[in-house]
Image 1 (cartoon, rainbow, N blue to C red):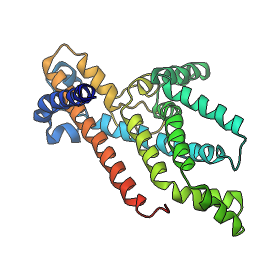
Image 2 (image 1 turned 120 degrees about the horizontal axis):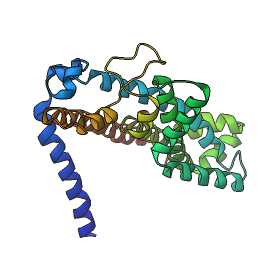
Image 3 (image 1 turned 120 degrees about the vertical axis):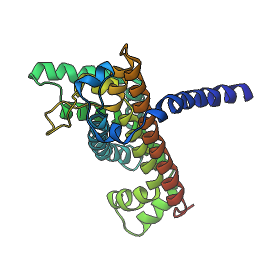
Image 4 (image 1 turned 180 degrees about the vertical axis):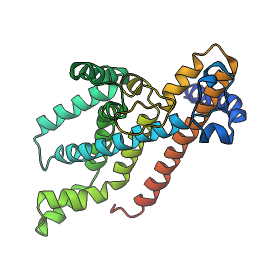
Length: 269
């Protein structure tokens, strides 16, 4: 156990240390407030990565919102109050399989549809790919949280004349809210850090998207492109982008922990 813990913590420390060591010195005000120029790709420009920062937010936030709307309905319906155990077990198994599918397959799936309908890479298709990626993650996390709601609490609601729908929406949802919130933020972190799906569907652009039909950059895709450069100055920009992405994901994790702990104090034990 000690060896396993040491390997995990050691690997994490090395990764974070390398990102901070190479990325932190490259962080400037211009790099987070300007879009890149063509000269940046040969290590001679003074542009930034604002296009990727904004693009990642525009991709991940709508995808997470759509995945939450779809997932909360599925998670509530999978409970024994609404569905048969065989049906719910089958759906949970399918969601687990979808959770384990590599994100590049979601991107490929949307990309094939794009070819069939003659649509080019854009923000909208990137959102759709990330939505498919996040649905099983958010749904299963919310499902497990809802399953932890005490049966006695639901029975008390029924005894007061509440319907199944009212109990699910007003009682179960409120009791399971910390887990639901954690699942949503977990899906957001996965979406904002994924590279394969946006690479196929959202494309890449040096400019900020003007509409959902414009191509847009994302932080992981930008990091991939910059790390592939033969110029050392460009690779340093990749470390800077990786450092910013690390800060964003860390911020999401801290918010998840803080809000989950805060709302757990108001739950009925």
